[in-house]
Length: 143
Image 1 (cartoon, rainbow, N blue to C red):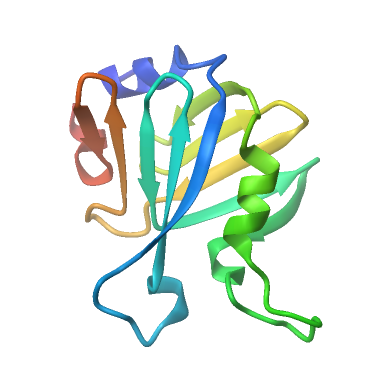
Image 2 (image 1 turned 135 degrees about the horizontal axis):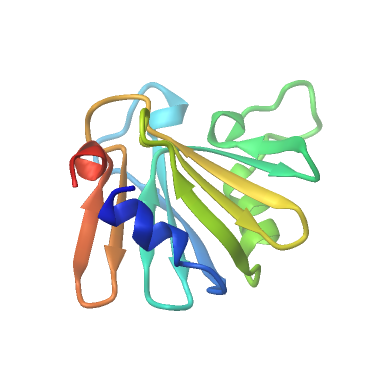
């Protein structure tokens, strides 16, 4: 197991403090690239991510791919608001990284799971830890 994976395995008991949407300076014609997600934890760790999915009780709840999509509903989905409502105050029970893909999985109380996907070999997610150290997705497999 890598040093980063070891760190994730020991990172339990923290709470999700905030979920923020980050608008990029250069607007994209693709809605999926128009906003990023930042999750802040009670120990001072900050996760910036582009692609994610939230499941609840074993079923898909919402993903960033749903953000601002209407799907025949009365109003467009605010995926960031749903994520915020589900995770803020939630306790992290376990965290892990897939050693092949660098996808992340976070298991929270109340049977909620957040998956953060690393679809490319570039910096698609980033951790900033207390003390201003960090980890980028494209280097996570190399430590």
